Length: 109
Length: 149
Length: 266
Image (cartoon, rainbow over the protein chains, first blue to last red):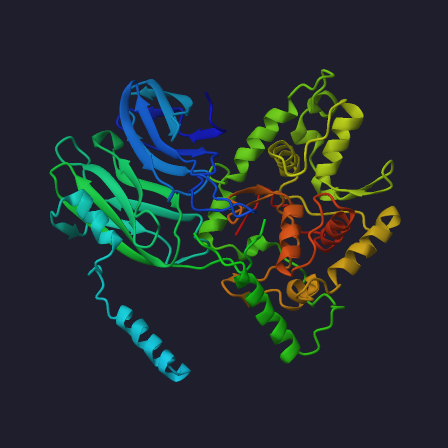
């Protein structure tokens, strides 16, 4: 079940052993739970809690998110190009709803 | 009721006292507790970690932050995790990045929220159990016009 | 993050006092200074400018991605935007630079949001999108984005002239409890500081804009509503005639400035 529009920027190809930079962005209000609406009612917390990246089935990066992460969370990280395969990016919110994006990478050499 | 003169002198004294905090020596506040929670009281070394954060944040809602840790990122020697901790946010723990040798290099970036001018600490946890940190102070300016919608 | 609404009042009151106390003759009827208006983009910090320029990191692009999908979303009648307009990159190029424009059927100027809704009601047999809804914002941003980099070039004469004049009157009219005219800040004091901000010229060439304060994308009318709020004037409804007239005036002031959509603002 998709949460929201999400995008990944990463090279489609790399040489084995290269360190590749990956950028991830997802649309999400990251409601802190500390704000009040126009009527003064408290707006409940609604945040993405985790962002996990697997590469050919192996977890290579994980981020724990709290309300201190800005709305529309953006993260830049890196991983070593080890083999041709699929990277799976999963954002999970506090209710367990997940957005998943997949990217293929071709690794040569 | 103190006179205005007395209040101004008192206020200046409080301001001066906080300026006297030696850099790197954290006041006993939430950030120290947050660090202790993760280190279990182990020593925290300075060096190796660079917290890249502007000195002045145009807006506390999205402050671009980069943390870089010197590490070969091999199976034998690597950064396990990088924690970002806040002195004045309602929740001291901003985020944790879990890395490992597959990362290739220990450098991460994200946008964080900062509730007020404060100290931010980047705490790196190594696979050998050692902890290294960098601390920066940041001034958070508030937009001139609060929207109302 | 607790924010005091009174901060804005006190900030603007301070500005007003400066104006009254000794700022040389600050009339409500202000003339444009020798320096032409510039986009608020020039006031961004290096970090925010880098975010705006990065087509991946710019959060506004998330809405534009949605807009691209909506462009090809089939309506009940079987039509989508592409049925008439084909590839937006070609057909929509230059369009945002000409809006607001007078709509002959409506007999008054309409902005891009309203024009999109006219397409929906008149040509697609659809209900209009609610103003400020995610869908309308996404589609408006997508259309405006096709004109990114192109100079603003609205028609302010001919049929548009009386509405442009009305917009100009609104821009220079003192209003609200704080009794301030747009021009007093955005012409007379443009470039000076208001607390942590530098006052812009208020040209609005980057809309819909990703505003950090909103933590999301928003329209020019949303911004105008907060301007009204800022001087404690009555906030018009989204799409109100006077906001469109003002939008037309602002677009005329911005003639020649490149469109920035999706801009990032504080």
